[in-house]
Every structure is written in structure tokens, then in C-alpha cells.
Image (cartoon, rainbow, N blue to C red; front, top):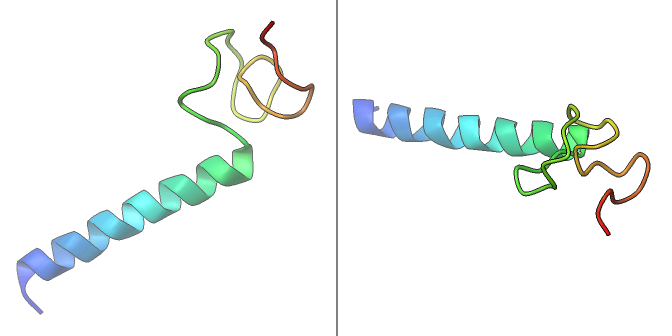
Length: 53
């Protein structure tokens, strides 16, 4: 396999793992900026419902 193919597969795997982790943690980079960690209160997570008006 060529180096480009290996790099592309590694890049795809990295994107896939990031998306999987974000879905598992119920975290979004587009959530409200009210603070809080992934999956917790205030990060736009679904634990306590939406934190916006």
C-alpha cells in the first residue's frame, strides 16, 4: 500500500473515532457556550435538557 493510502485511512479512522466519541459523550462543538464538560450540565448535553432560552 502506498503512503498516501495509509495516511488517508488513518485520517478517516481519526475522524470516525472522534465522531463516535462525541456521539457517546453527547457533546457537540456547536452547543451553547455555557460551559461544562462533555455529557454534563451546561455543555448543551442532554442530561438536564437544553440550557438555552
